[in-house]
Length: 335
Ligand code: NAD
Ligand code: DAU
Image (cartoon, rainbow, N blue to C red; front, side, top):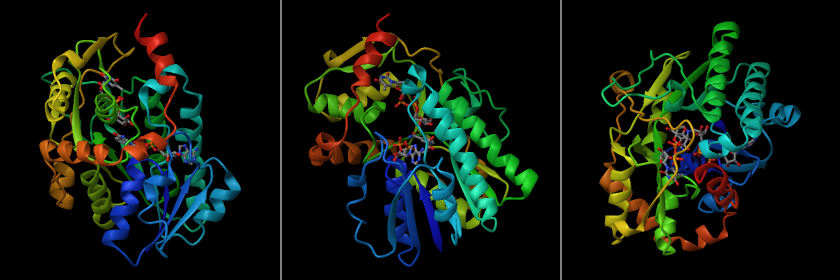
């Protein structure tokens, strides 16, 4: 199979490329990535010499480049996006450009090059926010995105479905919960807290730490994408989740505990504007139809992740860290 992966130099995409080449060594993978602040070729050192792996530096909004890159492909797996909610609160122009306009460009390239199979990677955040006792999101939950990031992802999901209904482009979509694992950019809460503690810094918990996320180990997400590509029904959406709901405070205490640090390392900061209270995923459709379910327990996955960051401090130091974090904290969290 010849697959073009977009955003393969980011966190989930780079783990996907390693996963896929390991499981399907005869398949040919092309990684199309613009190398934004979040894209890092160091994430792919293990595969860069693999004869079945090729990298193209390019923007998914570039019509000619994307059209050429998609020619002859059997499938597109579309990860590329601006992915961080806090950045979208500060300025969402790049989010609309990459997530909406970039997806439109890829869809047209898929349509114009023989209706290439298109798998779109999306998020649980498009469904909005749950109350503490609400039922988990599923494939029939109405869309209710509430951050500029989730609004841009929702727009892209609608476009992908519209290309199926209108043009019969063979698409599938996965909406997944919060991922964690190796190579995640340390602006997201788990790698930020681990790397702060490694550097002797406190961890900034938004509000009172009551917000709930459902955590999934990145390889479990990618195994779900694999199952959808191989066995999913064209035109369908699949919800993927980790079955690991935790409040941010529970999560923080687990990280502190595993890293041998005390609660004096917690710094409560002002809340994220519009902070969604809770996400949870009902993945019974993927379990029943595809035989997929998450395999890594949160305890196992968190331990592996902490070990990885400790053993890869060089990676951490080489990536472009965001000065924006200080700016964001000052202007949005300390008002
Ligand atoms: P990431 O920010 O780590 O990586 C994004 C990658 O996309 C980077 O390599 C970046 O260079 C590339 N990119 C951005 N704009 C581009 C453009 N215009 N052209 C080409 N490449 C571009 O993101 P991630 O956390 O790995 O997320 C990947 C996908 O999974 C996103 O679509 C995100 O919405 C979705 N998702 C993420 C999570 C999560 O918890 N991280 C959960 C569910 C879904
Ligand atoms: O749910 C899937 C989504 O998960 C993905 O679509 C997004 O791409 C991904 O970034 C992630 O979004 P979140 O906003 O949930 O992730 P983040 O790691 O930014 O925050 C997780 C929780 O931790 C959230 O409730 C906010 C809180 N938080 C975050 C940071 C960065 C803190 O308390 N302190 C922090 O410093």
